[in-house]
Image (tube, rainbow, N blue to C red; front, side, top):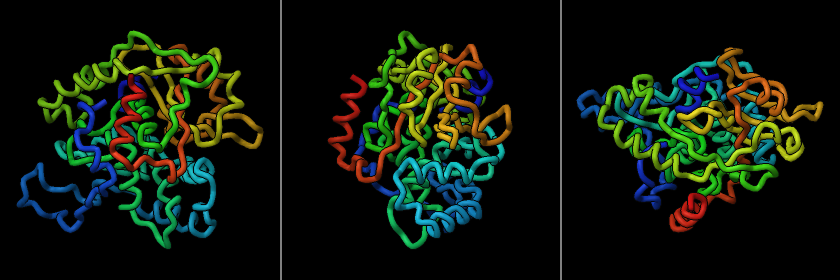
Length: 336
């Protein structure tokens, strides 16, 4: 599990708070027509669609099925799991977010998934399908990915805008009304104390952007210090079995680690199967594919490095926070 933490899932912070959250609802303009604009300066040239979106045929197949079966009318958690099961069995692939040497962009890879890039497009597609349309395009999904993956919901091409640590993702997305960070209110919840956050800066050679842009490493360390100061709660694994009945299909589960470096070592979804068991659905490096594993308590107890779990519950589109002042107020309350 340490290898998973150190290489993929904990590449799951960024710089100071997004300074212009009023832009959070602006769609990221994907200029595919400039794919071959080699005369543009590298840092200004948008990335081609072939780089930022892989697996379009699979995406179109999921959309066709979703429209035929009217998934958009299902509750958020149900349509999220419909999308998740369409990705079951897909191969595990690491570092799918490290797509360029310099330019950061919302991206999707439905040909190969790691733990972060499994749950994120499931949530993105579920949100996308909640807005009725006669057809959906990759750009629709990329807009949702941008809104949930980047601080303030906005990406201008800067790697430091991406939320790299999962614990911050729960807090950021709670502030924007996309996922309720329910952990502090669950029975047995405890705050993680004295955690040193350093995964990205210690292992900078593993991350394409940090390796090729040394100037990003110091601000990344500032981000890690800020994330370390956040009030992050978890449910100790000895108490997880008792609250499994309270977990729902589609809940986002962060696996809290005992080790310094980050708060979480893995992430996946709750899938409550027909036998009533709240199972951990995840992109597994060990199984080399997306699997529905054993119960979440059973999974946690299998590894001594696992401390417990962090839980976020995806919210319906009508709960999305679109007011910049409200977003900032929510965020301030969550991190105070």
